Image (tube, rainbow, N blue to C red; front, side):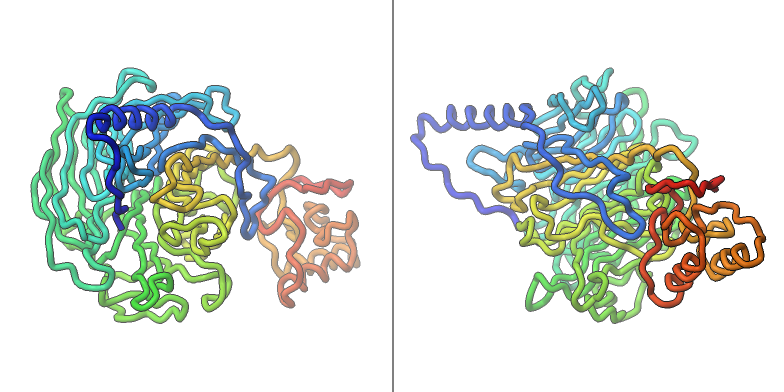
Length: 530
């Protein structure tokens, strides 16, 4: 998986000067904002109205952006990986933390500055908590830094957690989750993964960890430790294995309400064709009371999994996933999504129907983008029902891998680590998009077809419409909602439209439907709204 570098061919006396000049130019390029360009996608899916969102190119010309966090002034801290001299790749790079500022709030960052540089490269995870910043360099270390006095102040390295594992380890540590311990200011729980050593076999080797904490790690696992920031000194302790039987759980999100830990697990690559998986990617979770409990939960890998396309549950051991992601709408022939890279709960300011769910970026084919990557969708999942759909479809021209996600207020920031797809030649091709939910237009909110105003469309709505037409009562609470076919009149055809929608696979009702919303085609019927 590591990029193979060609030897540098240059006169020996000039090698150092040229190398320094190349490094300077790489760093300079990272600071110069490229001209803004239009986003290559809009949002789609059941109940999703593209016109409810503004999608902008927040920043481009970046070197492999992955992790993002919001600073106190609303600017973004972004983990990037600057290729080393002689390289253009992600895996031979030096880590740099950039600050991107959008002072006028127009969705385009007009300012960028370096807050820290010189980290081990291949930055793949970034989280902040309190005054601390946690950065993961894939397979190398987790760096702990301290924020400066102001959002634009340089960061200070406070310590590191160093991993020692074979270079051939297929799924090294690559992502993080952090949360503050209740009633203990300055104390945090840091979560990270050490995935499987192999694609489809039991991991028998172990890995050593040193630095702020020391110990031995078993593969196929999620670990947790406590980090304390007291008196300007950072310490760590309590290394604890909380889950096992996982191939590569490299993406975490805490439910902001319950504290439950949601995480993904990447499916098993195909044994004859790596691009046709043996098993489906998964969404799993650990309930808050079970995190760090006496039992290390076993999720079944490698003996248990859900087969790709056939949906067969193989083995059936361990904790079963909430969701096993299959092609849509037909697992045999539908649109694919493979290789979850990161997940986040939807921004609280997103429209009704999207709030409370998880958004996931699927990497898809490793070094391909655009029409050549039929697996790189951005997916919305309702963890309560297990239903999911593609917010951004795979094979979208101009999109490589929407691997980085950050939810904030009314906006979702999405980082395309390499818009051309390649992690070997994609330097300067990283892009961050902002997806902002637009304010709802003025007017009453209702659901098309909900004649009786009970908040759902069912048989009783068609009956209410017919009763009102022929008996004159009851009075319809929202005539605009009863106008099921949106022809600005209420008659028998509206009841028929509701019945066809419910029972005969009729056409979807006009908006607003199926979620409440404002009538995009206002007329004289009127409505008190819900």
